[in-house]
Image 1 (cartoon, rainbow, N blue to C red):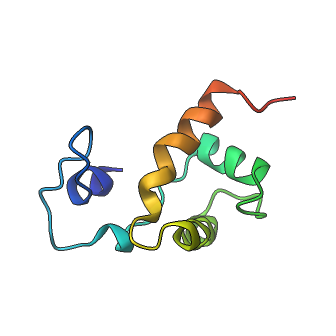
Image 2 (image 1 turned 30 degrees about the horizontal axis):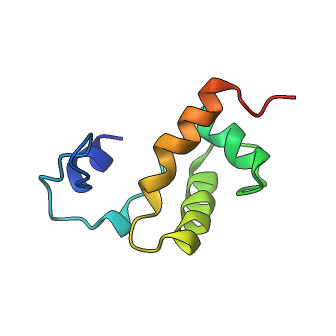
Length: 87
């Protein structure tokens, strides 16, 4: 998460003071909420919240936004925390 804040620059949360990495090189921060909502949305199939799931999810999000796949982490986290998709 810290790398996201330091590498990305959105003018709101992400301060973008590091230029050693590009946003396209970041991996999605994966917690239980991001993992659960990603599975519910069909973005990943793996049930474990592990490195391979991070790699799979980041690759899937890179299909949507190759220059900055991590841009989706706040949205996935927020929906996951809110429980909006629970049956």
